[in-house]
Length: 249
Image (tube, rainbow, N blue to C red; front, side):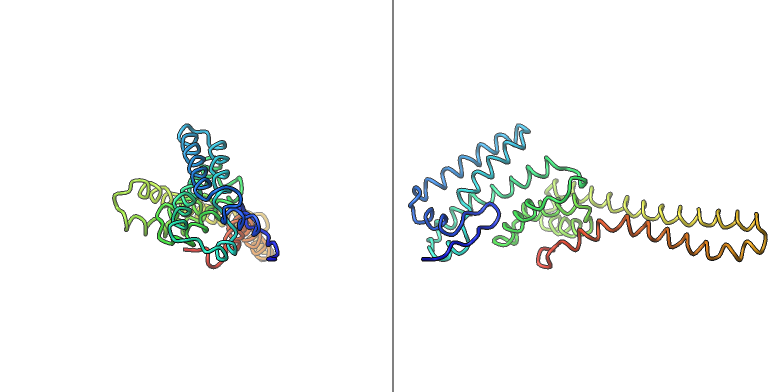
């Protein structure tokens, strides 16, 4: 007997997946219909602004059509069944991500790791899925990874210049990039100005001797300013390191 293998996030275990795929837990068509029902209910809740209940509906639907990878290989479903699974599962994944974005618009709440995994799941099967790419760009932007978001959005705008959502998101990301650059420039300019003022004050108070003494102090202050900058940038650097190499555009 094939040993049970731990399932991935939101995924049935191997034994359970085989039972469902082989019709031991109800017919295949019944599962697809039930997943579609959850998707439609989720869409209605999403459109009404009830993101939490919509997400629960989408996740309930996903449980019906997310099978263990090895089970899929062992059972060998016909192409029509595979297409039926993808036709309902991909919208469930994308809409679940949209709910998470709507519920957590600000970066301060931490990364939306489950949403990132769901987008990776879609793009693994459909690398050119524009909705999935757009959601990935939104997740990058929400995480403060504006350059990554900008690359994806520019590509989407070239592919479909008439899509307003792509253009609006790109405009927002570009403005955020400029704001971040301006803030960084202002930080360094202010830090260096303060160091210059303090150093001149020391020179005036102590004469030439103080000027010599203040040189190490200037270096110390520059080091302190550099340290402050690193501390400000460190969270963004950590976010970059947490991305797998294959998970970048």
